Length: 583
Image 1 (cartoon, rainbow, N blue to C red):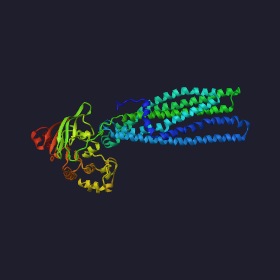
Image 2 (image 1 turned 120 degrees about the horizontal axis):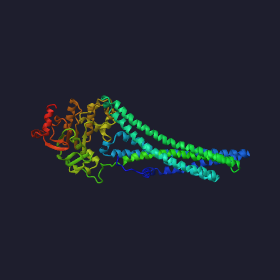
Image 3 (image 1 turned 60 degrees about the vertical axis):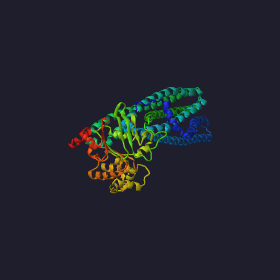
Image 4 (image 1 turned 90 degrees about the horizontal axis):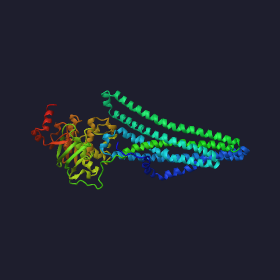
């Protein structure tokens, strides 16, 4: 993340242009509506001036009524167009927000597992929620609103100069220093706002981590430590929020003071000219209204600049995610596995490092014959699970290649590879939804196919015993099921897809003796004519495999049948002896 390219404001704004271009017609319509809005607002002071200097002075009630009607119509027109334009802009802003959120979600779910190894989930959630909303506000109330305020200011200035150039020049002269102050405060606001969002991301990450790990937090009495840590980050967040509030308030306060100076200056200059009969009361009243109409858009402009600066901060943070490369991609011209293939696996001089230079696999080479059952054993951290992740192409090898039935897996689509290779993890993840949804995972399997897979895995009776059977709702992360029950659903999830290669990552470690017996019976059928890789920590669970691969510190150090390795008296024999001793 730290290596992401820093973008200028113009580059950040250009990032939004393609999204705005999708709704070009609606945006143009909203901008065209600014013309009658600006005109209706600018003519109202002129109408007031005409009323004071004309019918009110002469006492002509008919003309006074007509002038009041014109003023009423200008107010009605302005309100109607204001509501219409506001609706169009808000609608476009929400559509753009939805598009950006969808693109960001698609990009995040396309990133490789290595990205999620270093990025806390809470920070990603902040990007998808708060940052995207702030970005959408750039269109909803910011960018188009700026055109509205500028149009209002320009039309007001033109109408003012058509009446009196001297008072107009005085009000115009006040705009330039105000603009400089707005720009300064907005830049300071943006710097503070970036820190606000960083600390908010960290707070969300802390919250997510503590909710998921609440059992460990409470069992080890970590509440006080976590509370103090959260309080420290919360205080930093609060300090930066106060800084943004200060700069935002400074803009409003500055504009209020300048507006008062403008009105006071118009009163003073106007009164001098009235005394010398160079100005009418109607013209003075009009310019007091002009002063209000001139500085009100400026105040709104300052608020919109705050929205835009907040949006630019959000774009900057979203771009840090969007710039992350999608490392695992489907080939442009993919190959296909041969229809007669039976699942031969070949690791050809494979090296891999999660961090550059820190290899966890070193020159691993082996071949698993079609239909062969192979166990991967070794101490914790020896690289067993890494081999599974590479085979499933969750990561790319740093060096070497992996072949299935003679085809480099980098030349296959991810869908074909992961349909061909089924993986059952030690801790399966369940989604919110019913049992059927958690077995099919969105694929087009019928209920009959789901039941058939469950029966083959001996889990049909367990599912039928649930309150609503196959349509029992599963809570988030499967909290209403035991660990063993979740594992049983994972077996059915794999069985329904008929993978050619099956990987079991300590998949029966969470089952009780009775349940494990049922699964072992089901596995005997599932593994027939399939290549299997079984990762095991207990050597007693790998008695029936054809061959055992022994890993140590990322290297393949031994290979052979159980009897061969025991006779060899090497690492496997030592591990077996320690297990027999209960060490």
